[in-house]
Length: 53
Image (cartoon, rainbow, N blue to C red; front, side, top):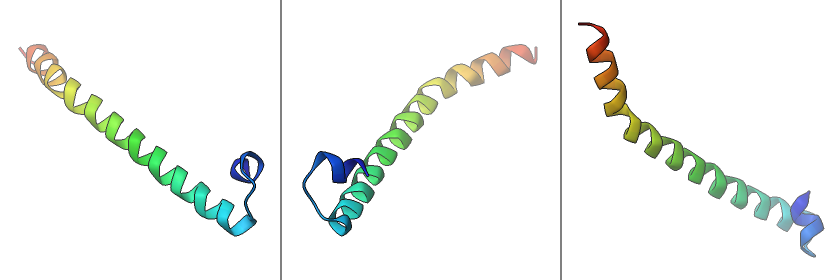
């Protein structure tokens, strides 16, 4: 619905643009979360290694 409101397009084009925007933003979120996970994984391993001793 936001694409229909923000742009002067028909319903089919609006659905297509909405799907494209959703895929792009979802992909960015996955990459960002994965990057943070990879960054903190070594810290997690160090903490877990120290807690076992």
